Image (cartoon, rainbow, N blue to C red):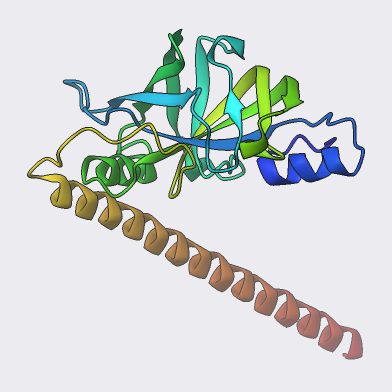
Length: 231
């Protein structure tokens, strides 16, 4: 895809069936948190990004085939077009056995209220899934009759990690209990977002009023100038 956007596994599979060479800019596939226990700073979430189990699409990603950098964008829903969706960074990515692991570092709620909201939802056990966006480098169609149409990815490059509402890898489960102040954290983060939206709406109204006033002034000057020409 020349536009650099992510596509889903089903779309990738359809391209292969159509005879496409499979060259794409990225894919989106989902996994789940292995643990949502946060660090002492409260902003770090250790996570299983992927493992070698068969996911709901019938696909498998080879753990040792991952290529990744020291720091990767952490976003919401594979949508990096909005600044508020930039939740933080994925650090300490590593492969251990058949699992691809990493630590999600969330921005503070003061920097990005949505990051605080998502982190609060994780602590409350509401958001439990992540999804890896990656460029497939090497893959093959599975020969397992139980996985007809399934893909085996043997080499892939991570380009982003997203928190999402629904994941596909059923083997990586949440393993933590909500904290007693989770509801308060979520409420505060939601209130911050509402305040920002209200402020933004107010600013938009101020801009609209200023433009209307400027338009009226231009019209008044034009009328005044026309009257002078008649005198």
